[in-house]
Amino acid sequence: MLRLSTCSLSRSPLQGALVATVNNVPLRLNRLKVNKLKPYHHGNLREALLVAAIRLIGEVGPTAFTLREVARRAGVSHNAPYRHFRDKEDLMAAVATEGYRELTAAMVHAADKQFRALDRLKHAGLAYIEFAQRRPEYFTVMFDAPYSGRSHFHSLDAAKQAFSALVGFVKCAQDEGQLASGDPVEFAYLAWTMVHGVAKLAITHRLPYRTRGAVLKFASFVIDQSLPIRHQQGPDRSLAETQ
Image (cartoon, rainbow, N blue to C red; front, side, top):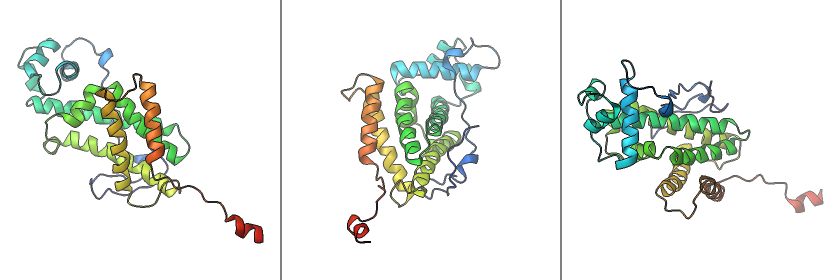
C-alpha cells in the first residue's frame, strides 16, 4: 500500500481537496499499461481506445486527432468509441485522468524512498519532471488540451488528489521544521510552478540539456535554490562563550 508520509494534514481551502491523514488518502492509482495491452477484444475496448488516442496525440497533438482515427488505429468501427466516450473531449478527459493518477503514484513512490520530509518534497518534484519526460503525451493532455475539467469530475478529482499529495509533502516539511512556516497551499503552488516550468521547458526542448539525467540535475539545482528552506540555527557563539 502506498503511503505519503506520517503527517496529518488539513483540507486545502483553495482546492477543496481532501488532504487529511495522508497515510489513508484513497489514491486511485490505476496505470495504463501501454506496452502490455492485448489486441482488442470484448472487454478491453476502452483501454484499446485510450492507447490509440495517446499514441495519436503523440504524433499530431491533442487538438488535431479525431475519434474516427482513434477507432481506426484501435481496429474497431468508427462508432465504437461512443460506447465509452461521449465525444473527443470526453476521451481526452479520460486520458488526463489516467495521467494524473500515474503522476500521483510516481510522486508518492519517489517520496516514499526518502527519510527527511524536505527530501520527500524534493523528490516528489523531481518525479513530476521525470513523469513529464516519460509521458509527454499525457502531460500535454493534462495541461494543454482544450477540455473542461469541471464537466469531467473523474479528471478533476484525480487532479485534486495529485495536488493534495503535494500539499501533504509541504505540510510535513513545515511540521518537521525544514520548510518556512506559512500557508502550505501557497508553498505547494510555489513548488508546483517551479517543477512545472522545468518540465514544460524540458519536453518542448527549450533547455540546453539533452538527457533526462541532465534535466533532473538542473531541476535539483532549481529546487535547492528556490525552496524557502528553514536552516537550523545553532546557539549564538558569543553568548555560548560567556557561559
